[in-house]
Structure formats: structure tokens, C-alpha cells
View (cartoon, rainbow, N blue to C red):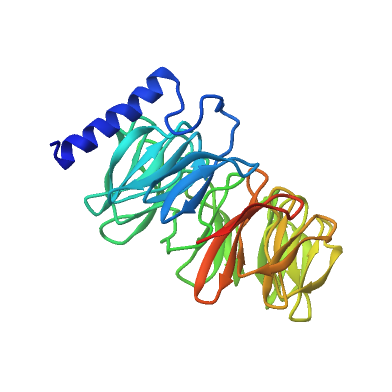
Length: 347
């Protein structure tokens, strides 16, 4: 009888053979997976597999946990360890990590021996595991925390980017680089933006702020939110109680009530404030809350999915992941851009 180690080795070998031969290890013979195919993780009978955008099971449930695909690979957990599969379901990086994040700019954050580092698409460490926290690369910069609990930016070689003008950095939501700038939080409890050399391109002067998106960033000035451009010009006068990020030419805002609407790039309210919660658009759809339940609207403000979900995630690849709360059970499924289920929430 084969022991566990032998069984595992044979399984991995079979999966790798699948990659070499080009066959779909788990799918049927007529499944053709190309670079533009988008697969979505689903849980079936306490195991995880993947469906396509039409709701067809492409990779049968096999993994203990599974994340979304990014740059052609997806992080999955198998027998307590994380590795990466391609769209055929074959392991291209064997399970060996305590944690694994999506690929970005050809690198992925993994946790190994309680430290975080970066691997390439072959699984080789390109930046050794040495950080207590690490975030994905964006615009060739990544936000990390050292053993001394200092936050820094590194370049693709792992070199810390810092000059005499670089401020002391704090943990900050939205610290990824976007449009050449990254949000930072100063010792004076104010917010500004760094350039790629880690110098303050826009000095810390705002009570609060959000990252740049579509050329604009929401900033808080004298208890009101407005929007600036990358030249620090005020484009939309501070007038909102709260504001989110621009996507698809629209940003969620809250003026003088407890409800959210959306403004365009000139600051004109184009979708009325009628939502209890509202998130930025993604793929032409935005998640909004009505009467305590989440649903989706299109860029005209038309409800395309009735508000009946306990949670609704951003659209990607033409689908939105939703959660149904049934008693104490939380079940996840997917809807398409018309609000129709392609995968009904399962246990």
C-alpha cells in the first residue's frame, strides 16, 4: 500500500503531466481554456472548484480553499498548504506556503516560515521572505513592513525606496501606487501623496484622503470631502459628508443625508442619493444597499439585481459574487450583468 507521501507525489506528477500534455485534468475533453477564459471559485460539498462565466463547472471541486485567478494563476489550498494552479487545474507551483496572494506584475506575496516574500511564476523567490507584512506590487512598488515594524516601499529587486524627504510611514489603507502616486499618513495625522521615489509629491495636508482613480482622488478639507487631480488642483469643491473612488466616470458620495448617490467628473449628482451604502463601480456595475440588503445598479442608476443579498462583491469578468444569509448559514453564488444567477448560492 502506498503511504501518504507517495500518494501525494503521484497526484502532483499527474497534475504536472496534464500541463505538459495540454490536457484538461479535471474538465471534459471538449473544454478549451485560453488566456482570456475567466474562472470563478465555488464551493461544492466543502471542496472548491471553478466555474466559467456561464456557470458551467470547469474544474471539479478538489481543493480545500480557492482564490480568484490573476495573471493566469490562482492560489489554492491543498492539505493545509497553499500553491498555485493554472486554468487546467494543474499545480504549476506546488502547495508549500502558509499563505498566498494573487499575482500582480509577475510576482505574488507568499507566507513562508512566518515571513512574507515574493515569488515569480515558477515559484522561485525573487524577494526572500523577510517581511512581517507585504502587499502586492503596483507600478513597480510594493508596501511592506520590516521586522522593526517600519513601513516602507520596495522596488522589484526588494530594495527599499527612501530618501531624506521620505516621511515616516504608517499603515495606510489604499497605499498602493496608482497613477504615479501613493497615499500616505503622516505623524501629524494628515494625509498626502508620495511619488515613486517616495518623496511627498503632494504634502500631507488633508484630514483624510483616498487613493487616486481615473485622475481624481477624494480628500477631506474642513470636514467636507471633495476631489483633487494629480496636480493638487481642486476639481470638485469639498461639499460632501463622505466620498468614494471614481470608476466608470462616477464616484459614490453622500451630501447632507444618510443616503448615497453618485457624481460625475464635474461634481454633478447624476444618480440620486437613495442608497444606505454604495461602492465604486466595477465592470459597469456597483454594489448598493437598500433596506439593509445588497444589490447592484448600472451606470444609469437602474437596479439590475434586487437588493436581497447579505453581501455583494465588486464585479469582475462579467460576474458579481453574492452572499445569501439563510438563518446562520452563509451561502455564496454569482450573478451576471443582468442580475441573473449563473451559480445559485450553495452551502
